[in-house]
Length: 325
Image 1 (cartoon, helix red, strand yellow):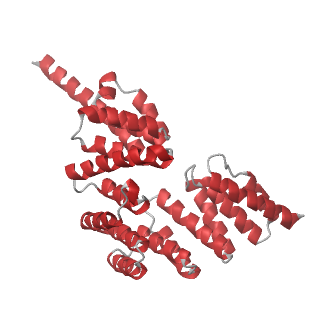
Image 2 (tube, one colour):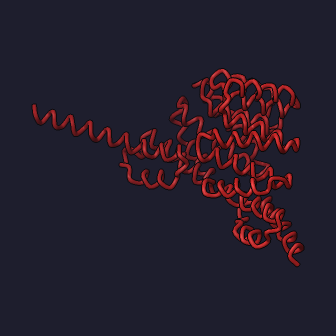
Image 3 (cartoon, rainbow, N blue to C red):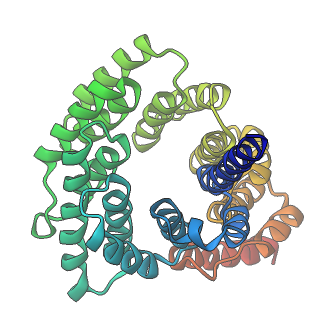
């Protein structure tokens, strides 16, 4: 009897340890820490790695590392045996839409078709899947009709999302209205949303970006201050701080506010945003004629992975040379 109890306890302990390890990988991916996720994954047992949950995590690691083609092939093969699995369909769709952005013109339509098939299947299996709805809205707004883009469907999915997650749905609904040339309706939607969610960083951020497009700089700054104040995490906060700096750089006003915001954003931001923060800092240092700091920040900008930024930095170098010659 004692042996049976010990054996049972040992089995439970092993099961709990297995679950905990898989959970650590998942939690690391949710936090955007792909390095930790990959390190923990390599320590899992063979059975854990080949389990469905393990295979989904393996594909997610590939996605987060930027290996989108490998991720697509991984999930495509996985779906052959898991056609009704929500996560497999969702991440297949996610990898497909990333590949559609990267692929040659000849392959884009194929990946777009794969994306729609996988994401629509995800929604059919789980109508309240907010990630799938969010991605579908973005696709239908951005993609041309030949690739399956449909602004009417974007509106439909935004309304569906609003019924599930009101705050997130309001933000997406406003974006749909803006991109369908219904600016008044977009602002009304955001205003109503902020009355319902007065501490919503995402709604303040969304409205601020609209004010920035209209060059209503003071209104944008005030909304960004609130987006920073109510930011639920560092990722959201760093984005809002960056936009505050960009507002100062684009307007040529409140230069010190912009420098302060960008300086706070730097330690919080990810690899993708850091070069753009340094670029905006350089602009602001040029505005207040602090050429020494402008030169330092300019030297730190990594343009190797962004052609648009490379072009902008080239112009900024010419501007700095002209001002200091």
